[in-house]
Image 1 (cartoon, rainbow, N blue to C red):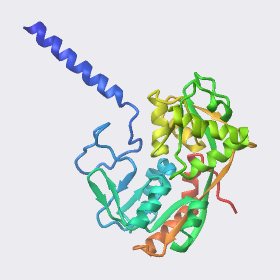
Image 2 (image 1 turned 120 degrees about the horizontal axis):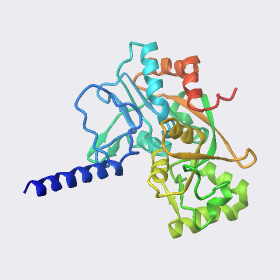
Image 3 (image 1 turned 135 degrees about the vertical axis):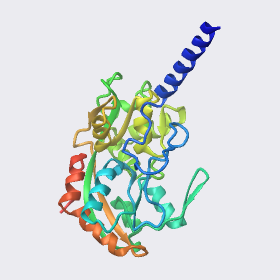
Image 4 (image 1 turned 30 degrees about the horizontal axis):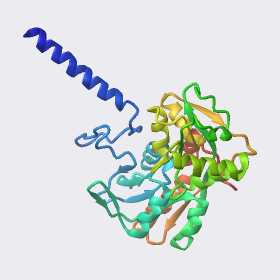
Amino acid sequence: MKYIIATLMVTLLLARALHAQDHRFDPPWNTPPAAGVSFTVPGIDNVPDLYGDIIDPQLVIFFAGNQFMVIDSLITSFKKTYPQYQRVFAETLPPGILAQQILNGSLVVGNLRIAVTPDIYTAGKNRIDQLRDSFSLVKNYAGNTLAIMVQKGNPKKVAGLADLARKNIRVSMPNPAWEGIGKRIEEAYVKAGGVSLQQTIMKEKVANGSTWLTKIHHRETPLRILYNEADAGPVWFTEVRYQQMISHPVSLVTIPEKENIRASYWAGILKSAPHPAAAKDFMNFLLGPQGQAIYKHFGFTPPEL
């Protein structure tokens, strides 16, 4: 009987260890708030792209999702510089989803409905231009370039964008329907191999399942690569840099300048901002030396002058 009980205990412990191993790369990758009851269950209850205080916030910011890595440092530093603002709520979802949320007035996650009005919305220039009449002030604050994220050591020997058309390469690709980066990557495909390359990756390989169109690329692409569900994914350079900063087993494949594109990030204060004074203070902080140093640390390029 003791032997049976001991065997059962070992089996349970191994099962638990294997379960934990299944989720070893799961977000949140930042440091969650220390206060309150912790109820993050890997693979079940985990909301890594909603941050901070949703009840009676003093500032609400909608960040284009690929900036998620800066949020901890940025918001913490902002609160220290402007101690009058301690309840800040931020979202780092795809900019197209955030734009829909602004237009529809709410976001639904599982059974939760979130109805908050942002003070600031950040996105690429094209998305900002689409909503230009909604802003009282718009500023460029950072830039980025493309890179290819692959499994550590690059076992499939991906050398560039053209290799993503190979039949044995599983591609994780941002969906252009709601991700501005998706359209920019398509531009890069055309630069690298013409329309035929773009069509192979975005039509033929999507149809046969070897190109996966993501729902939320800034989390999904690295997770698919880390869990061996994809071999490569075109992303912003800062995405690969961050995964390497937190010691996740990925490698970076550079894209030559002639095939690459440059993105610029813009922030707009909404005319409907519930907290206009806080929004102006945050915009000054974002463009000031502290905010710019944080973005530089995570690999973003300076704003266009």
